[in-house]
Amino acid sequence: MLVRWHEDEKFQRHAHLSIEESYVVSAEFIDEYGRYPAGTWIRISHLSEHNLYVEQDTLIWVKVGHLS
Image (tube, rainbow, N blue to C red; front, side):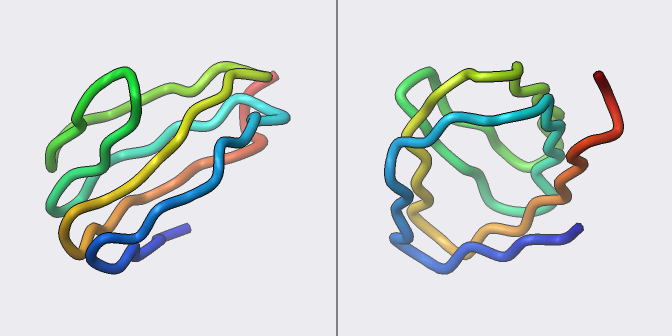
């Protein structure tokens, strides 16, 4: 799915209940582990936790549930 986050949007800390992969299409998203600019592919592990936020409008492509 494509997900658009609006400028200065912040998310509460959350855990992922499955493996998730995300590709940053435009701008960047940020968490306590780093900054992920456009062109970055990220795999988020099962049960990992993080606090996400963006500073500008950001578009990501997210894949969930395709890996076990």
